[in-house]
Image 1 (tube, rainbow, N blue to C red):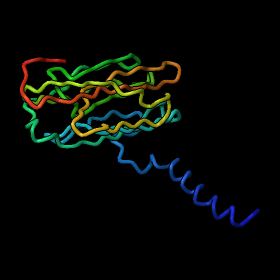
Image 2 (image 1 turned 90 degrees about the horizontal axis):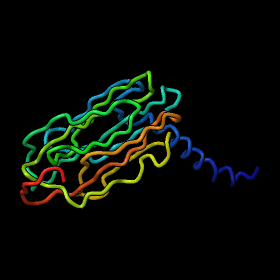
Image 3 (image 1 turned 90 degrees about the vertical axis):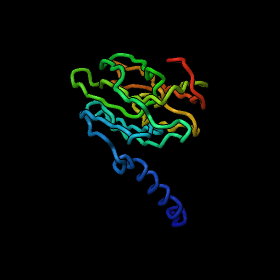
Image 4 (image 1 turned 30 degrees about the vertical axis):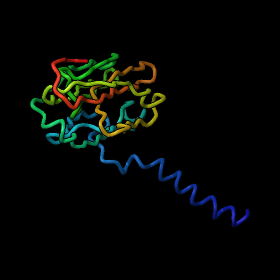
Length: 191
């Protein structure tokens, strides 16, 4: 074999090997088949979500989240609460009530259905209203792949999600609901 070819191929193989094991280096909030409760520090909201699927470990996912302070113009949250909960094995759509923003997630694993229940921790900011809302594409794009959402632009916030569950593949796909928030007070709820 040509030694020059080996020198070119070795770094590529090393990179591929590192990528296939990079999920071990993440700061996961859970272990497989374990529940978790993640809350951003006061005044911060979720801006990134990443998950890694393993069929071998109960068709479950490891999860990690990142938070970021909200812009000064939004002020401090005046109230925070745990919103609607889904049932394992079921489709679910949840948007924070009272125009809230997602500032945390909790989840419990159910061995009997190889799925999780989910609940968002929501925070209310004065009387700000959402606008220019959109849903992301499916995350992950295909069941059983690694999933990652990073809020695409400063000024957008996660308000909720729609998720579907495949009973055959025992995994979920997510469409996150992203919105901007008004810079002024408004009297409307749940746009």
